Amino acid sequence: MPDITRISACLLSLSLGLPGAATASIIESAIDTSGLTGFIDLAYGDHTINSGVAVGVEVDNYRFEGNSGDRIRLIVSSSTVGFDPQITLRDASGAVLQTASCNGNPFHCATNLDQTLPGSGTYFLNLSDVGSNESGNYTLSLYQYPPANNWDGIAYDAPLSEQLGHLGDMDFLAFNGSAGTGVKISLASNTVGIDPLLEVWDPLGNLIESMSCNGNPFTCTLAPELNLSETGLYRIGLSDVGWNETGSYSIGVSCLFGDCPSAAPSPVPVPTAIWLFGSGLAGLLVTTRRNRT
Image 1 (cartoon, rainbow, N blue to C red):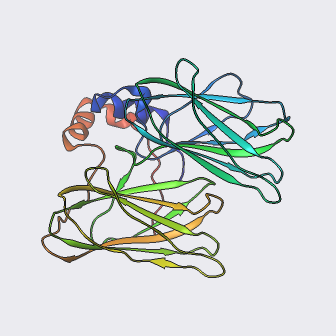
Image 2: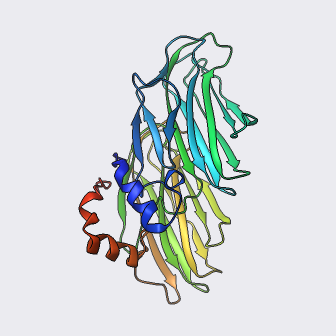
């Protein structure tokens, strides 16, 4: 996915009445860490670019604001063979909540860290090499998992073409569903090598589907059929198994039976959108949406 300016995140958080630092923009942001020192601030949906540990003893530090009960996913993907990235998550007091790492020999590697945040406030991330004896480049991605509003709406019978544009990328979509209806989610990889993972959460936040396919040596498809038991917003997560491949895919949602809602959901409520335009602030909400074909 391409970048979005930070101002959209600020305006969205103000308009939604949510804490600014804990709310991400609708489309993710790329944070260029080249030349930066100290703690680098991240928000949900952010990923780093030009990031690396120059010498084995270096530790890169990040921080973000989270809310109690937020489920987060951190993904660190190495692009250097031999580098063994390790990510440590700490709460505001410095206590270690969890650590994850992967072995970068004989190939580059990726790992994830999933955590439900125990409280609201500042969280710290430390990224280093296991053993402090190797250097290398990496991409660090931070997601709310699944996101509250960092997703794009999809309507029935309106397929989209999208990109997993960077290592560790996760795309999130959402559709309106009605209890007692049946839907089919069709996913096709368009790039040889990516192994798409499809996840679906119901309106209560329960993971109701998780499946993947092998994209080597050919492209592959997934097409689960779901009988919906709840009315509300269903969120879809798309990623690459292993978070080590990039490429394009196509996805569509079809109504198989019942009275399915026709409109695509929007992460920005209608009254909020009206307020933004009426106040003249809409011109400041500069976004770069994903290109669709």
